Length: 273
Image 1 (cartoon, helix red, strand yellow):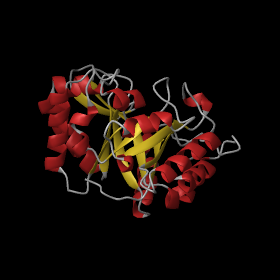
Image 2 (tube, rainbow, N blue to C red):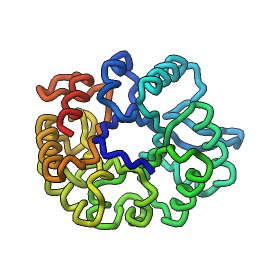
Image 3 (cartoon, one colour):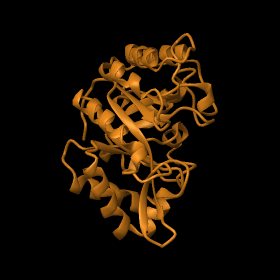
């Protein structure tokens, strides 16, 4: 488990543009969540792991991996996001004996520092617990396991897009939650939804306030300056114990003037937390 009390800043990297700006953000970033990994089968029936629509070793990623290695050398953690839209967890748990070893090998091949569980399909808490237990068994003690549920899931104890699971069941094994305060499931327009989660028994240090970085990235966008004001207020409320902030996603992130400026976004959010 990661017990740091330093506020974290996490960005998701799926659209592989503006990567040249990443080095300017290293001092402000805790982790890069590379998105998103899925399982499936080729036309001949052989199993695969894909990063978005391609194999991780596809030549299209030849420049990506060295750039991410550079980030790691600067102290930024590299985390593999599993899931999101699609059926990654259904495939995983339907053929666990095949896909789990493939997943471990991929994480080791590309030297990942952790896994982010973005469960957006029905799962059972039993299967999820097994997956977490196996990762804890097979990776070092400093390996990160994070999760990215919607805010409503932690507020109510019922995840509406993950089969109704209660994340509190496994929270002691999750380093931190990259909580989605958007898409109609919560908001960082005020402190209210975040406070509601803490009132359910979660530690502020374990909860990152997740926001869309650009209105083009989904429903429920809140201006960055408002997000920063909310995060700053929460950090004051919880006496510097705020878990941090998360942004979906890096390449088109706006600054507090609502101009496309990923570097400005990272510095503004870091200052806020």
